[in-house]
Image (cartoon, rainbow, N blue to C red):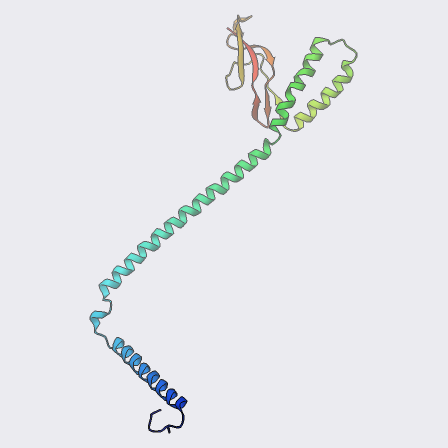
Amino acid sequence: MSKKNIEVTDGNEELQEVTQEATDTQNVEETTEDTEMVGAEPSARPNEEDTEGLIIDLEGKVAKANEQYLRVLAEFDNFRKRSIRERSELVKTASKDVIKDLLPVLDDFERAFKSDPDNEANSGFQLIYNKFKTTLESQGLKPMETVGEEFDTEFHDALTKIPAPSKDLKGKVVDEIEKGYFLKGTIIRHAKVVVGK
C-alpha cells in the first residue's frame, strides 16, 4: 500500500497507511538479516574439531550420568534387600519381648513343682503349666540343654565355680540355676549355671 493510492479523506485512513508502511519496512529488514545468516562465512560456523570436542564432552557427560544412575540403582537394590531382611527378622521375633516377659512365670511354675511335689493342687497347676509351655513352644520357644555340657560363654552365664564332683565334669556345667531359652534359633535368655573346676 502506498500514499498515492489512498485519498486523504479522513485522519484514520492516514494513520492506517503509516502503520502499514512501518510494518512492511520491518518485514524487509528481518528477511535481509535471515539471508545474511544463511550466506555467512564458514569461519562463523563450528568446524569439525569443535564438533568432535563437543561430541567427546557429551559422551563423557553421558557416561558420568550412566555411572551415577547405576550407583543409585545399586544403592536402592541394597536398601530394598536390607528392608526385606529386617522385616522378615522382625516378623520372626515380633513376639520376643512378650515371651521373654513370660519366662519368669514358667520358672515360677517349675520352682513350685520342685518345692512341693506331693501337693494335690499340683495336678491342676500341672495341666495349666503344660498348656502354657506347649503354647510357648508352638511360638518357637525351646529350652537349652546345659547340665553336663561344655561351658560356653555364648550360651551360659557362670554364676559360680565349684570343685567338680568328677574329673570328666571339669570345665563343664554342673548345675543349672536358671534355664536358658532359644526363640526360633535365637538366644533370648542365657542359662545361669554353676561350672565345675
